Length: 183
Image (cartoon, rainbow, N blue to C red; front, side, top):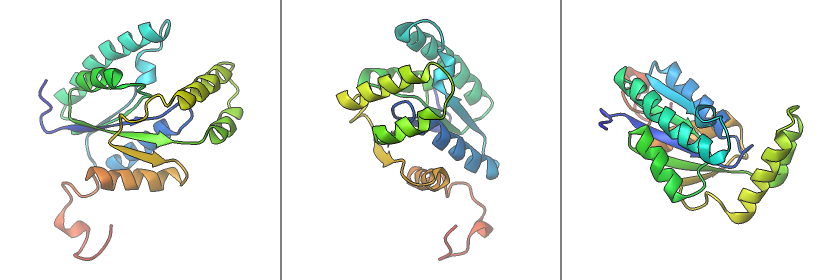
């Protein structure tokens, strides 16, 4: 698949780490610059059956959705999904079809427990157990290009990631910032 100059970031981390919030904030920042982007929380593309069936369905849906986004000219892809290993990473990035950098969000289990305690759905205890098991086994560790602790406000982390990706300075008018001025 040709990416047509598009590129992506996959924000990964265990359930409750804040990857979807960070992805949404990056989308907001791109939107403020009138950039055409695709924002995808991949959990929603595969919410069917067990984990294996869901993963296969997510990949099928991602191929189609990403192709649709590329077809209309999306230049940036912001994706949130917990990737457990390199094999899964290879499948996800192939389905996305654009060069993709991977950011793993780190959060201590006690913080995840606090975040999930406010959620009223019954499945959150299962999510908490899954997050604890993934953290204990170091699932997803080592597949990233960058690891980020989610210990600051989400807008701060998102701006730092935009800078790291180089997305904070592309296609900006010369008048956007004068020399020596930080934007």
